[in-house]
Image (cartoon, rainbow, N blue to C red; front, side, top):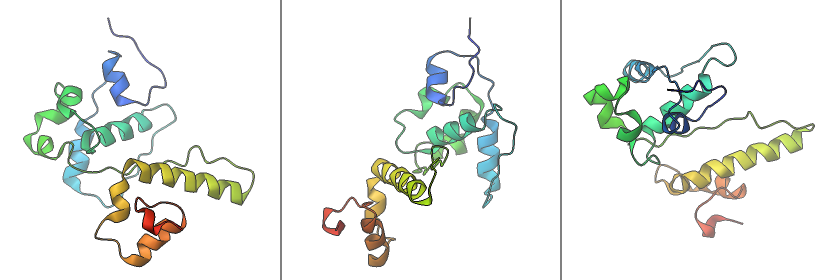
Length: 152
């Protein structure tokens, strides 16, 4: 028998723990096919927004090792077109939910920390050929570089 979970925002944990799950992954296909420049998820609290964002990240990201194990028996995997893009796109997910500070300087430090952690997940971003020297120097100034020669 499946257990009803409350507050779980981790799609992999949800699937691995056999929690009751309502498949909303048709949204991923629909969203991908629309190719919208901006998507706003407006729903009340505790309505699954964070879980959906985690689901989208796990579906597309190159960091996820086995999309078929997570998605093989749910709607989004039924589309051949979607299976071809699964695990092929680096997903950059940045949340400011933990940025709570009494001063601007402390908030800035928490934002920089969040960016460092993000770049730590994808160090190739700081050496991407799309960046010019000025952009690399900018990242290096914040300690956001995977190239030690650029860190001052």
